[in-house]
Image (tube, rainbow, N blue to C red; front, side, top):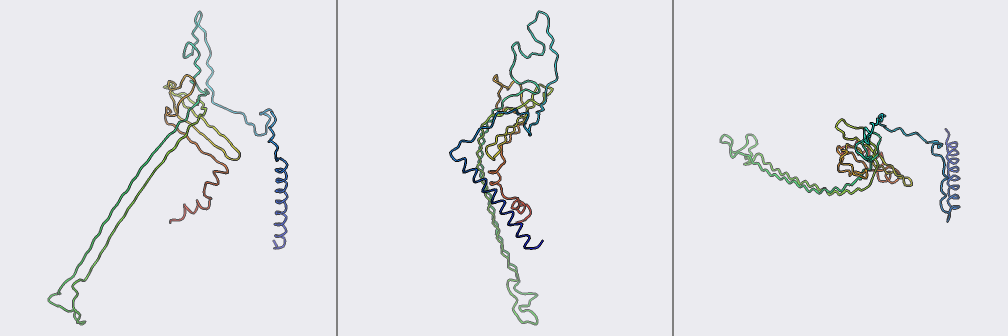
Length: 248
């Protein structure tokens, strides 16, 4: 490609970008003092990105009624229990994390050595043959000193308090429930994710169908985000590549 043709194409691209930017600026100016309009209420199943949800469901259990009995087969209590107890049920997990750790470590090590070796005469000789130079009293003198000082400090404090709804995905043979929940909140161009998974006991579920996260066994709790703010806070991929490749 010739240089002139390249310059023409670059100018065309710049012109198009400028026109698009100008149109966007005009649109923003036209909405000054105007409240953002609300989206119309539409059928969510008719949206292009709609996908049906498939969740684990319990196996159908036939209901058998005994004559002259108020007890329903398969019921956990005389009155209906609203707490989660089977696959597909939903319970609310109250995530409460308040961790604090402070560690101070220091290691010091010092060593100093000094060696002197020599001879006053060699087999009765006081001078080196052929050179007529006196034999030195010290043939070898070495001094060495080693010192190291290592310090480490950790001061961490994490506080997280929120709620997330989880779904029962499995009922273990001993009656414990395997749960998993995921929550996504998007504000502008930043997405926040909260994931909770683990094993819970039905006895630890409170009457309002909630449960503290401290009672989850094998708990896996993840809270993070992705988006424009997270991208700015992360080093560029080139810098991360050099951090892994360069040995110093």
